Image (cartoon, rainbow, N blue to C red; front, top):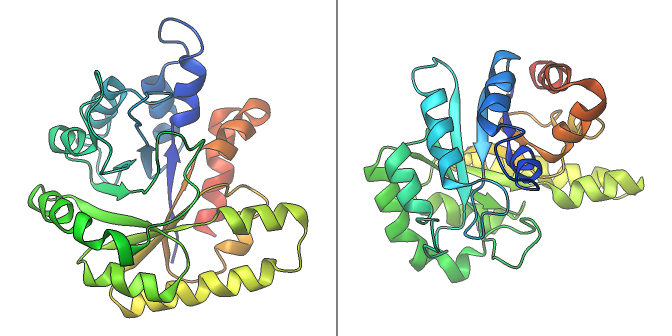
Length: 252
């Protein structure tokens, strides 16, 4: 089974936002990624608009629309209220109808997402949001740690997928830690539990050309979302070559 590659465009938007204007263009770079063979595009708009802006979401949704086999994934905190020109995650999803909405428990003061949901505390809050998204015909993925108990709770909520948070694995891989194999075994078990519960499994966060092959030795990873590392690799490889390099790993 091959794994779909969804390119996260947040870092392109972050670079663009360091100056006035639209350079580099998020839309143009999204098109380059799709033309290079990416299976989809991911964005994670936040209320502070530190990178992806609502206008990017609308433009990218239009880009993906009608392209067979290409998916658009919007990530975000479903509990974050509207702020200024940010209309809230659910409004963006309602307007653009992405193929997938990945719900993430991040807060405005986090540099980046760094943990999955604790569904022992947030299930009641999530239930009406999940119902609303299903009415829109959007596939739902929950950002989760590789915890079998929590994954079973995710299944009970009726979502279709989970996205395993891979940050800790990537950090220990970089350090050359002996715990890396233990990490991989935890992710393997988590994937098996998810599949047994009828859930498909995505993965993301700090995956790169070095640590991705070992991670994708785990069977049945449906999709990986990669942005930061791919953007960094593109600085010396070129964006088309970077997308191709990641896609080769996902297809192997």
